[in-house]
Image 1 (spheres, rainbow, N blue to C red):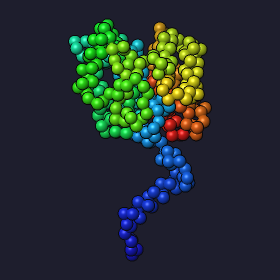
Image 2 (cartoon, helix red, strand yellow):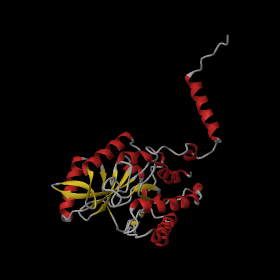
Image 3 (spheres, rainbow, N blue to C red):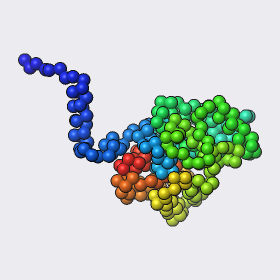
Amino acid sequence: MTTRTPMSRRAFSRAAVLVALGVAGLAAGVPRARAAGVPGGADWLGAVDAQASLARLTLPGTHDTCSLYGGGLTQTQTLSVPDQLAAGVRFLDVRCRAVDGVLAIHHGPVFQQIFFGDVLNQCQAFLGAHPGEALVMRVKQEYSTVSDAEFGALFADYRRRWPGLFWTEDRIPRLGEVRGRVVLLADNSGLPGIRWGGGRTDIEDDYDIGTVFELNSRKWPEVSAHLTAARAATDPQRLFLTFTSSSGWGLWPRQAADAITPKLRGYLGGLDRSTRPVLGTVPMDFVTPDLVRSLYALNFGA
């Protein structure tokens, strides 16, 4: 009979680390972010340097984040907000209709079966479970025409009921300043925060694309040029946002996404990832976890 000698907890832990390093093929001296590999989607920002400006990161995002209903003309996503966040999405595009004293989430005339308070609950729950993370949220009035002052007052009431959730200064923060919080991009003059379309943002959102031919000749060249401009930028106070989404009379959101996603993948495939290229914030339609991962992995040189 063979007698097994019990292994101490310390010896077991050391052996497990050595096995993991051997499997990964890692040598001494490899930078910590590379040695750690690419984190899972729910916790990747927690592995990023706290001193990093949000403008100098690659942040996967979603266009019309909550638009899961309404059919071919309206739907832009298949993943719920919690599923998007778990996959690694960190920019949310939230469209709010002011109605009866609350903010209902719409895409055009179509109610998306969720209210702003539901979105905030989902964000708060995620950040509570993953305190190393941070979110960037564009808030825009959609399918209502109340004054900016009234829209701002409605938002202020939500902010009061979710104290500490929003970060509303008009500057691009460092990651460590906003972990556990939602950075507000104000697409309405009644809101506080970073001004959408102001001097701190550089936005590509040419969305009215009528056909796939126009997507090939106009939209994709604009997207690729803007991603390249983001890579060349150095200003920590200028946030690049490149929307890959579009639709038009002969090109609905799903068709547009199916046409542009292979081009985006090809662009990503042509990058030297070891240089950790910064693409800025990239909102997309019909995101999938693998596409989101291919973007945030750039922050880790992978």
